[in-house]
Structures are given as structure tokens and as C-alpha cells.
Length: 460
Ligand SMILES: C[S@@+](CC[C@H](N)C(=O)[O-])C[C@H]1O[C@@H](n2cnc3c(N)ncnc32)[C@H](O)[C@@H]1O
Image (cartoon, rainbow, N blue to C red; front, side, top):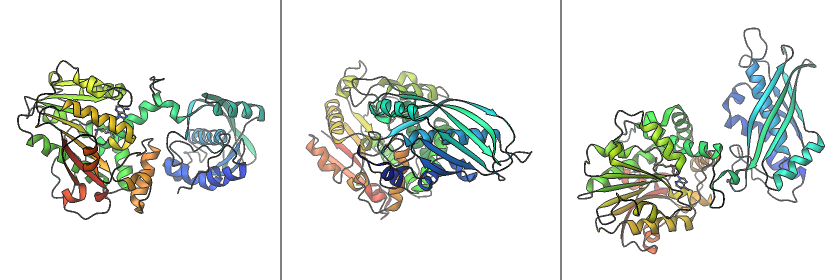
């Protein structure tokens, strides 16, 4: 369940309570993001400015062999009780991963450390209480709203049958999410940013590891399972539950690229721009002995690629060139074009797969103009996928697409760009020969979701 979050510096506590942080809403949002809270029937029972009260029931899921609460679940409850008390102070600010929101408006909260003292076994429903001292609360608000990172130590107390059963000292960080994203001025990255980046690439690899029932989808990547790991598998299953077409969308685009690569005569170079954890370079290396693969991504992802490709039976490292670049800052025509092994005069395929939706229109224009400088040979082309504008602007009435976009938002990977006419969009950038097909057309399926997603092949 999501609700429109009001955002205003003038917002009253009552408005904030109603739209963002009331106990029913927070119970439902937290339970859907953290399934163990649902399974244990944990709930938020009271929220005030600087205050949170929660309840961990004594039930089969929460107890141990003695019939008292499992210690780790008390700690879990402490985490969310203190975190929510802290969140009450960030008036009007949605929480990344919990509320449906974009990075430029949300706050990221994370636990830095905890110390829990268990005083006596809890033999009744467990009430957790975090009350932030008004002086400390003021300090936290001031720091957060002037744009500084907050490190707050909060006390959470637990009572069962009217008796104090545990006390926890919780240390949290809180920071505007946008500050965790690297910029031109501040290129350093946070652990959280790096985590989100890996999460979405692993999720795609997790989908690519699966097989489709669709008779037209036969391509398969034998390495995807390994590189996705359990994290990718978990996220893929979660998002596939929300949007069942997602797996076929990823497998279709992957197969469409396979077909393109096989069709380009005398192919010499393949560029994976925003390579993520796509293992096609290794998958194609043996069949395409004359091709050099350029794999370009942010440094964290390149490091992750290096880590996971070492786990594969063959790395083909002499045929692969790994390049770190930030597409928002760096000029790809230079990063790739000036590499001694790259030659813009030979037949080349540049693949920008599953990426255009995460960059603004202006950023995309810059990226695709750079690609154009890299494809001097008439056989060379750029492959890219696009979602329709309705998917991005939220004008879609399709509840499954809405659910999927909410899922992507909570992964911290909101879609921000789409176009209804990729062919025309390419042409406006100076490309001359463009072919576009929707995933629905490719699969011969008249499906509302598949029809919002298309692939283009563009030449100069
Ligand atoms: C959804 S993943 C798709 C990965 C891959 N193409 C695939 O289909 O499996 C998006 C990729 O874009 C990369 N990316 C995001 N922001 C970037 C940036 N500013 N510069 C370079 N790469 C970026 C991410 O690291 C990630 O690998």
C-alpha cells in the first residue's frame, strides 16, 4: 500500500502523521519491505514526534524452546522501533526503501551498531519504546535539514507484563539519499550506493538465470546464476512475483541482442555500456574469436565484474577490456574511443541494455551522441531498450506495472526516462537508420506490459 506523501517545509505534524508515518501505514510498509516483521506479526502501535512504540507478540514465530522471545527478534524490533522514532523527526521526508519515492527527496537510514542487554526473559507480548530527548531531537533535525549526515544514539526499552526485560542502545546514520550518489563535485561513493548498484545488476542477472516457457525464447546464459548469487535470485523472484512479464522482458531483450550480434558481418568489437553483470562477453567469446569486448561501468561494478568472472571456468581476459566510467560525468566517446584497442572504423555493436530508463533525457542525449562518435563503420550500430513515457510518468493504469515501479523505487533504482517513439528520438540525435520493435511484437503477444517496452537498433 502506498500513499501520496506531502512534502513541504510548512507541513504540520498532523499532516505528516496522516500521509507518511502513522502506525497503520508504517506497519504495512515495513511488513512488506521486511517479510520477517509480517511473519512475526510485529506492529507499530503508537507514533508521536520523536517517539515510537511497537509490539512484538509472543507467538509461535517469535519464541524459542523456552517459550520466550528469541533474542535476535528483540534486536530486530529494537532496530525498527528506534529507526522509526528517528524518522518521525524528518518531517515530510519519505524513507528510501520504505516509502515509494525518488532518491532526490528521500532519506536513507541505516543501523551502524547496537548493544542490547537482555535483563529477563520476556513472557508476554513485548512493547518496545523509543523516546528521543527533545534537545537531542532538535539537534538531529537541525543537522539533517542543513544537509549534514546524522549519527544518532537512541535508547529503546522493552517491557513485557509491565516489567523491563531489555534495553538497547542503537546507533543510526540518517542522510539525504541524494548525497549517497556520486556527483561531479563529490565523486566518492558510499557503501549504500554501491550496494544499490549491485542489487539491481544482480536482480537482472537473477532473471537472466531463469528459463522462459515462451516457445520463442531459447537463449540462455549459463553463467547468470552464479553471478547473480542468492541476492540476485531473491530480488529476481520478488520482482517477478510483482510483474510476471519481467522475466520474459529481460530474456527477450537478451535474445534480441544475441541475434543482432550474429547478424553483423565481420563484427570486430562489442561494447557493453553499463555492463552490469551481463556475462555475454564470456558467453560469446569462444564463438566470436575476432571480437574484442569493451565492458564499461562504474568502478564498483567493474570491481564486482572482476570478482565474479574469476569464479567462472574461463575468463577470456585477453579479449575483454574493462573500463571504469561514470556516464553522468565522463565523455564515453573519449573513455572508449581513446582506448588503444578500440577502433571506431571497424564493425562494432554498442549495447546499452537496461540502462536508458535510469538516466535523465539530457544525460541520455549526451550518452547516445557519444555512441555516435564511436560508430564510423556503416555496419556498426547501437542497441538500446526503452520504456514508454507512461511507465515513467505514472500515467499507466496497469497495476502490475505500478507495483513493479514501486519495487524498483524501493531498490533505489527509479525509472526516470522513457519515450513513446525511440526511432524519432534516435533520429533527433543524428542517427539515420533506426529499427524499433516492442517486446510484445517480438514475442507475437498482444500484452499491455510487453507493449510498453521496446528495443531499437540504430546506425549512423
Ligand atoms: C539495470 S543494470 C543493467 C546492467 C546490464 N546492462 C544488464 O542488462 O544486465 C544498470 C547498469 O547501469 C550502471 N550504471 C548506473 N549508473 C551509472 C553511471 N552513472 N555510469 C555508468 N554506469 C552506470 C549500473 O552500474 C548497472 O550496471
